Length: 163
Image (cartoon, one colour):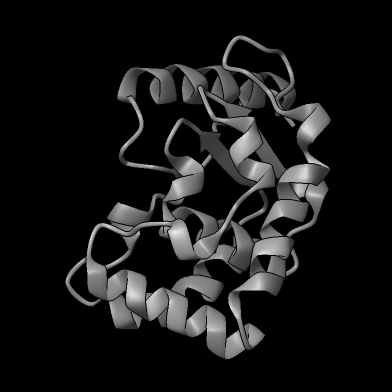
């Protein structure tokens, strides 16, 4: 599950519960298992955690994105989404639930404006992106494509699409 810790908790909880109920119904009672960054990544050793992020995300069957108001402005969130795609995650394996996201911001995403809780994390993530892409523009375009591919299917917490 990818989400911004800066977004309102109740909306995320309601969306997650709605999605989990749909998952259980579609899976004949099987509860989903979630990977939650803060519980799985050592917050005191971000460098080691960044190196392990592709391993964690490649093991996920799907990526549930709880896209609240600040999601697209948080660099870690967008990096999680992008790494999932780079590790073989297809559009069909991504479920984006809109919980107050600014959909226009998805089309204008710019990594240079995204923030991280710690300045050193932001610097490190932008450095990894630039080392991989040569500059931020191709990364920005790739992230925008992911959201564009889901534009017509963005779910809402009250919706019935459980993917």
